[in-house]
Image (cartoon, rainbow, N blue to C red; front, side, top):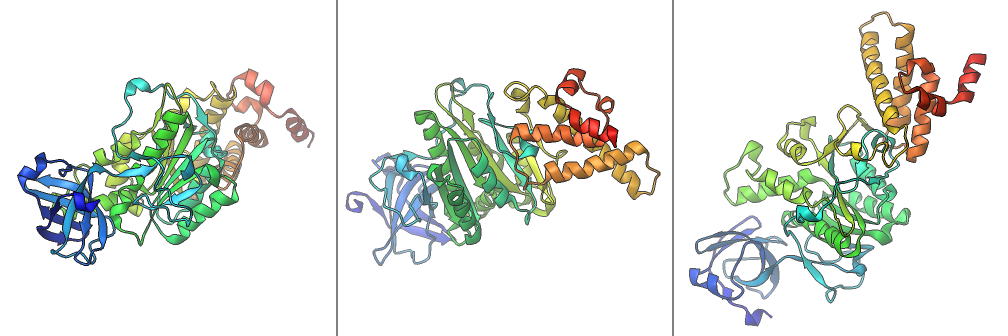
Length: 454
């Protein structure tokens, strides 16, 4: 194929994984002329080939990212432009498979070179084809299902400090979530984390409906930037063409942003806040905005991990992310914080597709837990505590153990029943300040009578 393509052999410089090649301006009017985002093949002096992508066009100079790195490439190499952007394999055969950042399978399974391919990184779906989010994705995580529901077509990150068990938590959501297909994208993972995700999906018996795109920490950083686009392109086609409810899991987007920063520095771009490129917001938004509920088709829901260096929520990555997404889950100390977490779409499903007491339970539990934190502060400052304060302290301990711990797994109805039980163990019915009809229907009568008898 390369024999039929025009080769350009004047390589101007090699910086990191980026090479710059001179292309006459007349070549831009020819077939297979270089275009932004298109692929190219770099032929080394020893005859070996490397795949690259156009990332900048300036007069007669074209900048290329080399996927496998520039090791072994010299100024004697030549470049041929393929005339099309990066594509990813899309067919039923990709289910249960693992791919690297170049789209090649790495699981030892059969080749898929003859399967159809789709272009990655395309525009977001026309808003006229979207509908308002109104369906809940059950995760069996009480702090999500009760207090901050995950809604189909939502885009939401898990804000976490490095060192927290966010990857096991994300894997558990992928296993337990009520979705037809799970598309996982790993960015800069160590091998142990990659193996953990794969083993978790296999052990749970969901690997047959899972697609994995993985960039390891030892892989070229250039490939890291392609993982989200590949995962989202596949997810969109499953949703639009097959009507599937697709959950996309990405971990973690801070590694993606760091890759953008490294590439922009190599490109001599003017850095913005903390060295990140000035278009960081746009780069993140392009990916998150792929989340959609289609009027004729399925849905794409995007759940990511965003690590916060130094637990700093004002860091450019979480700060920009917060303006794009529809809330966040705040993970610290192995718990989901009810005060730092938010789902802006939960009102679309609470009490509408869930049980009638859902909204009242959510508000009452958070109100009492807020009181429990105030009582803890009074206790720490050696103030006298009232009988009601002791009730709040007991409730706070039970709430953290039964609901906030990310290892707790309960179906929504079981979690709601446990919430009523927890309230009954700590408070009298008249102290709940809830609708009397709900108290009469759901407050545990037997437990109440036992406590009176004692």
